[in-house]
Amino acid sequence: MTKLGAALLPLLLASTATTALAQSAPAAEPAPPPAPAAPAAPAAAGQPVVVVSPGPVVVTQPAAPAGAPAATAPAAPSTAPAGPPQNADWNDLNHINGQLVKVGETNDYKKSYKRTSISTNPIGWIIGSYGVSVSYGVTNNIAIRGDVGYLSNYLDENTTGFSVGVGAPIYLRRTYQGPFIEPGFAIMTVSRDNDFDYAGCDDCSSSSSVTVAGPQMLAGWHWTWDSGFNLSAAFGLGRNWSSDDSYSKIFPNGYFRVGYAF
Image (cartoon, rainbow, N blue to C red; front, top):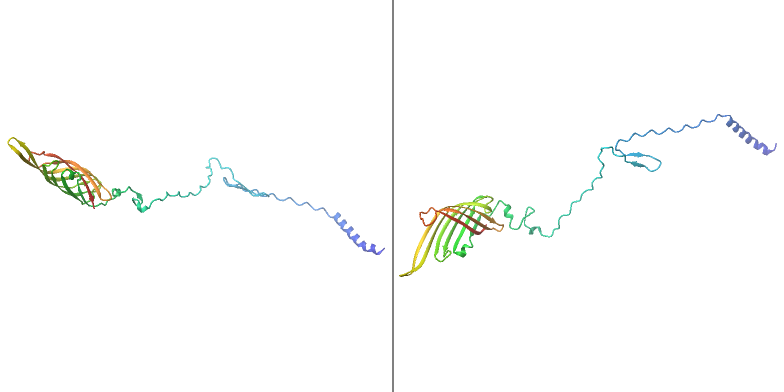
């Protein structure tokens, strides 16, 4: 046997032995299949179902059960509306605590007021009746008033007179503002000179005088503005207590005055 054959002989014997062992060994049993995955717990009604697959994760939303209210998207946060444009100095506007009020009418909303008022009848000064009246507010609804007047060539050149009066106007809203009633007392003396001519007498004259005194009741309205400027008017009737029968026992009376309160 050559040296090459001697070297290959052991390798040949080992290969023959391995083949024999493989043929004589029993065949291996196949591996059991993998156990099925446990079923997923059923999703609660209205809850999303997550399906896991080799691909991307997909989330499905189940249909709402019958009778359930439909889901609504959350409302977007609201933004405050922009305010009006500011085109005037707030200090130049008439207002009460931020509420706009017409110029001159702030007085309509206040309980406080200017207590003293001096007034007169501007029309009287044109026709010969000169007078002045002074009022003072004693409460939020009551004032006291006194006035004096003088007649000179009243309506014509032959009539003169003098008058004084007192009153207590009672205001339904607030002193010097709105409707009022005014009980009072007045005294007035009027003289009239009559010139006439007749046969045998040139430039003859006669005079007459009458005095009226008694209580009176007036009703009127008073307007007052923020500046203190005010206006009042009242009308009513008086009772003549004088024994002079030349004047009616019931007489009309009234006044119109423009004044300033402070």
